Length: 63
Image 1 (cartoon, rainbow, N blue to C red):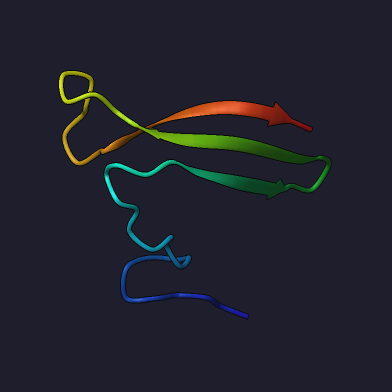
Image 2 (image 1 turned 90 degrees about the horizontal axis):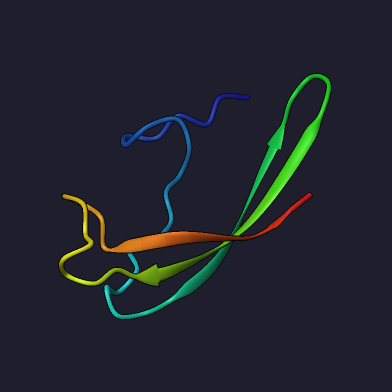
């Protein structure tokens, strides 16, 4: 099964307001191991922002 969209290989998250925080999880299933990351996206200060980025990620769990 191939999940190709017009924007890339996988669907993207819906846009997040530059003033809101969000929690997300990432699951990476490989051939010999599985890794899960839990991260919190927090709005970045105007002087900390990278071009095209509105949030900074803070890892809150790894398993």
